[in-house]
Image 1 (cartoon, helix red, strand yellow):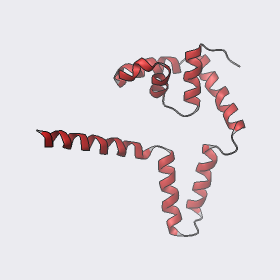
Image 2 (cartoon, helix red, strand yellow; image 1 turned 135 degrees about the vertical axis):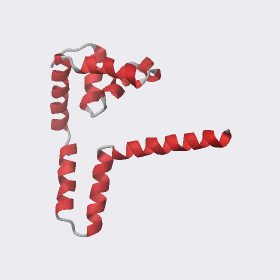
Image 3 (cartoon, helix red, strand yellow; image 1 turned 45 degrees about the vertical axis):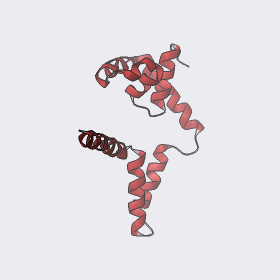
Image 4 (tube, one colour; image 1 turned 90 degrees about the vertical axis):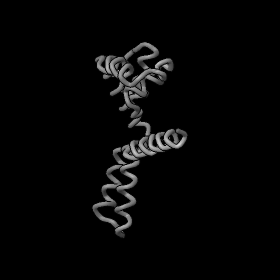
Length: 126
């Protein structure tokens, strides 16, 4: 096992779980929750670029994949199988919807909807 500082180890664990570098940095360094993205990203990128951190991320991913009976990759392959050979057409729509959710494609929509509500609320209050 590659030895890292406590903070870099936690950062590597978060990255291995699929968290973005910026979000991993914010988890490890909670004071950065108030920072702008432009301030967080360079610091997160610096940690992520370290060879030892990259190697540890790969170790953790290997450990996790050995632990879990069902991986994200297996889920994606199963859903693609449904799309390629559906029992009914609605299966295709359901599989695509699930793939989109797995890959976070709805997060941007949620953020935009939230922003729209906030902007409209501000306009109404003026």
